[in-house]
Length: 193
Image 1: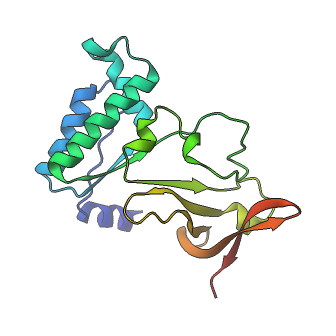
Image 2: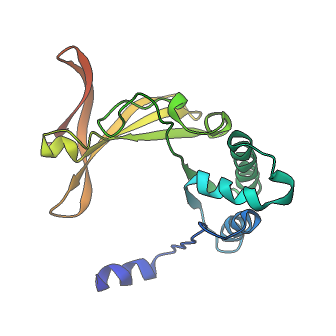
């Protein structure tokens, strides 16, 4: 633990908890401050719904519904990114549907909860898929990394797989492919040799 704390303390890593009573404008100002004054290259916003909820306290936005709030957040984040050059990764929730995500259902762009701006504004959308309920211990600890949108070169689909190694507490890359198993498409993982 002490070694991890020392390592993290020596990294150019800044953590800001925007959840709770922190005003929306304050959270955006912090992101811009980190980008401009602290030379932060990448911001991870976890999660966008919590930031959008901060709009509820903004005078001119009390009449906005969830979709409109998400549109405003994405517009403001895109503006900060364009102005400062900072890369912003946004974590988003999935819609409640008939799909069983915790059992490895494949995620599509339409599954992202919120407004259309969550799928139209970003340059890249990446989904993490995992079957936590699989009876096979190896498979239940594997995650497929699926690219849903890629403005850079258009390549989409399963990019790679990661396995959580409980012995080392690290993620390790594994081979992954989608194949038909008993009449259904299934994500299959294999350790790299």
